[in-house]
Amino acid sequence: MALVFAVAGCGSDGSRANTIRVVYRSYSDFTAMGPLLTAVKTEFEAANPGMTVQLVPVTALDDDYQHKLQLMQRSAATAPDVFFEDSYYVNSDAAAGYLLPLDDYLGSWSDWHSQFIESTKQAGKSVDGKTYGVPLGTDSRGLWFNRNILARAGLPADWQPATWDDVLGAARKIKQVEPDVEPLYLPVGKPMAEGTSITLQMLLHGTETANLYNAATKRWVAPSRGMQDALNFVATAMREGLMQTAAQAEDTQWSRVERTRLIAQEKIAIVMDGSWYPSFWKPGGVSPWPNWSQTLGTAAFPTQHGQAPGKVNLSGGLTLALGARTVHAQAAFQFVTIAVNQKNSAAMALACSWLPVRKDVQADPRLSQADSSEPFWAGLLPLTHYRPTLADYPKVSDTMQTAGESVINGADPSRAAQQWADAVVRLVGSGETEAG
Image (cartoon, rainbow, N blue to C red):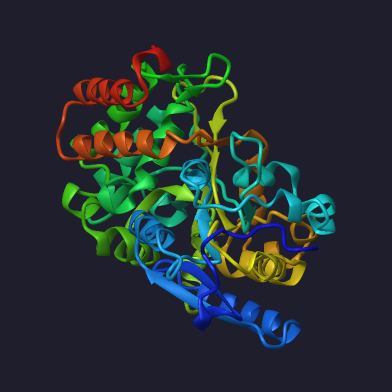
């Protein structure tokens, strides 16, 4: 494949004439990628004598990582050649001119056509029809529950809630018999950033409103009775002391590290979150826990009243993207193809407890051997939802985070829902919204 892109006026940074810069997020809850990318660097440099890979870990939470990445993009001296790109930023970053379209490279890459699962390719695709990111992994969301704690509360070992009331009811029973245990964990609060938006959308998709964005009418759904119900669910759990306290939800150390230790110490009973949790409990993880698979069960998160389809799922995931300022596009794309080849993609799935994006990795028996919950989470993918792939989404997400944070700090959920709707209308324009 020939080089198809160069930035006029960028020239070549002499210190980086033969170097590609790879930027990725590294934090205490996400430590596996350093060793994995180091192995990719070794493989790439062996295949390309004279070329060097500079790995640049950014120690930051999700939103802070994104802000630092955007600052890097503004200067040719600091702009990355390859970087981690969360799928929900693809459209806004493409519109801002930070990303290099990959279609010319993907066209002649056989693995892209034969091995990548079709639905996962959407993670890196923009509304302009171009692809800007290659998926690294995907995920599912639902409920983890501690069988021991639920048994003491009189709940079955194969607990499968059918409604929101079932979830809250179980949390109430646990609170009665286990006063030293937090019945329920919900990813909300400022440190969770986009996690708060995802929690609210998981709930929203289980309501009659069902969607944040109406693809048929091309309008954002605001005001939304479903969003009000989602906020009310969080408010109810908070008001009744069924979930983490507001102070815990606003504490970065608790939200990002301590909660995983408390789960392993059997101090949190039910967790509404994702399929990647086993990565925390593996040797070398945040909270090594050899017996997690014997202790924890899994359940799909139910719709509000048990209405069809009965359960909901929301998927996301990281991609590898090329920076628009790169003067090493060909080499940078080759680095990406090595990073996501069968061997390295499998290693990432195993280390990070990601659901695979390649067919040959999906068929790898090591995944279910290493993580007995993997088949359950993979089974939720056929009914999954994705966040709206629109340039305005990150800003709309910010308004959801504000609404969620206000509710956990005591705001009335009806008022918070109305303030959220007003903020969305101001953001996208009244002609771009509809009531739901």
